[in-house]
Length: 270
Image 1 (cartoon, rainbow, N blue to C red):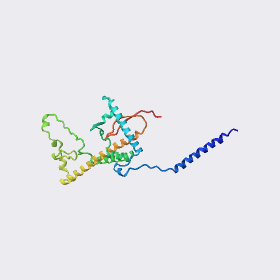
Image 2 (tube, rainbow, N blue to C red; image 1 turned 30 degrees about the vertical axis):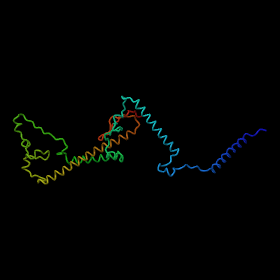
Image 3 (cartoon, rainbow, N blue to C red; image 1 turned 90 degrees about the vertical axis):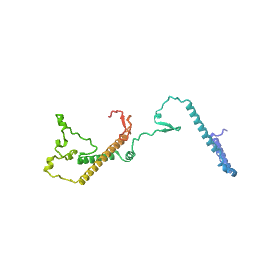
Image 4 (cartoon, helix red, strand yellow; image 1 turned 180 degrees about the vertical axis):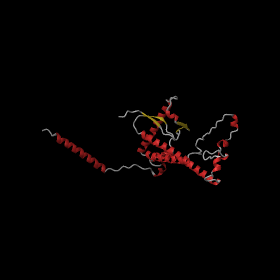
């Protein structure tokens, strides 16, 4: 009579499980083998090296030897005429390759603003500075501003004799003390007919000149601030434009006073 295959397979499976259970029970009664520590008279030599420690040390040694072998091979096969673009930015100093410091492209103040503020905020501050500059210009008129280009007044004569006898104060019909003024230069007739209005003493004039120079300094600072904000806004906008996946080529590098210039691939829009 033939045996049932299903019953025989279940019997063998049961035997295997029983054997595994016996092995686990036998191991539970085994003695625990502990690795020997460093003897007392050898404590000065440090920890006793085990096989796993030796394997780590041997693997590290072999890895370093392979690296040195690869470097020797590379040095033997090196072409003295080969060139890499990184050679222009790296110099050898005391046998160590040091990357040359690149020129500063962004000042710390610009970097702080670019990281913390949005382009809309920067543009708003720039427009506010521009309005203050226009108001100061309208008040001061930039008549005796030191940074302004000096105007020229050319006089024309017919003969050399008139040139030799020429006197600026006489020609302009004003006092010699007022010739250097670019504004508020009345004629002698006006000075004789009307009284001088405003401050006339030397102390008051110095105070007014000091106040005017203070306003000119404020105007200069605001103009510089407006220029810096304009550059920061351009740099932030350039970084936003670079997020576009359109193919682009860098035309000009970024500097402290100007953003980087990129040429984007022309793409037809639907």
